[in-house]
Amino acid sequence: MKNNLSIIIPAYNEEESLKLYLPKLINFCELNKFQLIIVDDGSKDKTFDLCNMHANESEIMNVVSHKVNKGYGGAIKTGIEAANTKYIITIDADGQHNFKDVDNLYNEIQLSNADMIVGSRESYKDKSKFRGFGKKIIRGFAKLLMKIEVYDINSGMKIYRTELAKKYIDLCPDGMSYSDTILLVFINFRHKVLEIPISINDRISGVSTIGAMTAIETIREIFNIIILFNPLKVFVPVSIFIFVLSLIWGIPLVLEGSGVSVGTLLGLMTSFLVFSIGFLAEQISQIRKNQIK
Image 1 (tube, rainbow, N blue to C red):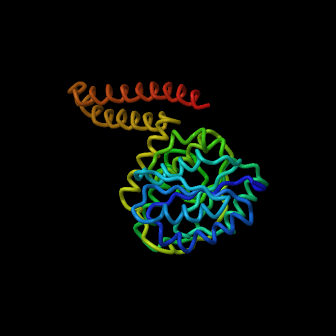
Image 2: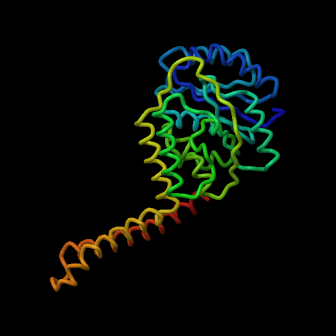
Image 3: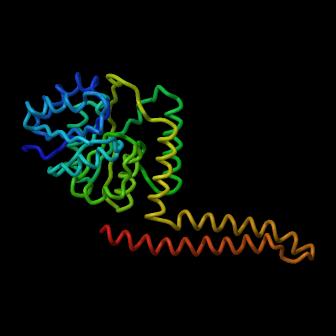
């Protein structure tokens, strides 16, 4: 390979989109000598047959197939394991991402010596108000629990160093929340993460499978990552809240001469217990992070 980049595409029932998108993508990869890895994630249509046909005619293309559907993140993780280039970039199979942005992100990561660059869709407005609102909630939740400067944390177009991706993929889920989680992992391990704008097209075919359950899953996975990297940020505020609430409840009773109520004692004990669990979780977190390093 002249250029050390693998393009990874997770594909599930994307036959119609890939009929139009794939020939153009293969031509782009051949011109730039990029490696193309498509992971058919147990599609029920002819996605695998279509990709395999093109792979037989192109030296730069590799097709991996899952017997059963593992999920968006599971497909990307399989693609990462199959990659042997210095960098990888993930894009969608529905034709929403533009080739010029692949070039832009690839050039930028080499110039900036970054570890990850996120393709930001900040200027792109979701047609679905529900999805747009869901993304705002996810971004707000992530920023509430950790300091991040990236706007589009769930962007499907990210370029990063393959070595680091392979190191951290076991921390990432198999579902749609993979995109958010891998970014948060890079940030928490103090890797250089940048963000540059990209343009977005409408889907060539089909409809998005992202819904309310995806948002719930993403928030759950973000919470899991926070517990892994900085559990005190979760346990300490909860402990303080219970402690203060217990005092607010108990002090008036003490001033009235009624003594300390059972509810107040229970609250104070719960606060201490939560605080202690937080420190225990912090110790476990340090052990796990050292094992990963």
